[in-house]
Image 1 (spheres, one colour):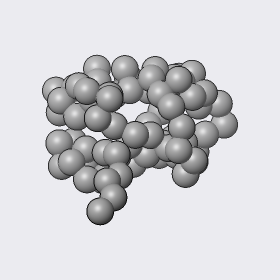
Image 2 (cartoon, helix red, strand yellow; image 1 turned 90 degrees about the vertical axis):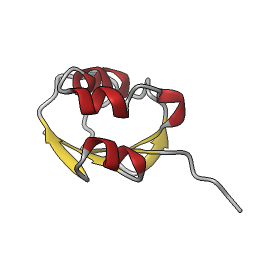
Image 3 (spheres, rainbow, N blue to C red; image 1 turned 180 degrees about the horizontal axis):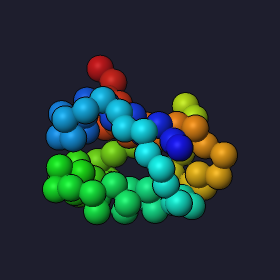
Length: 82
């Protein structure tokens, strides 16, 4: 089991702050594919991966990052400074 956390507009589109997921995904991209196949709201939230950042166990990473041993994956929009 892995905790999947959603922040900002990702949370708004999915309608929940997190999911607890049973997954066979090897990478973050595989997990995204599994989530997108669930329901249309996930498809909408993950339709443009270039607009998203991802962290595995609170470490910023890429969508090709392996999930072996991971306990948490978080998705969020890029941070903007000002």
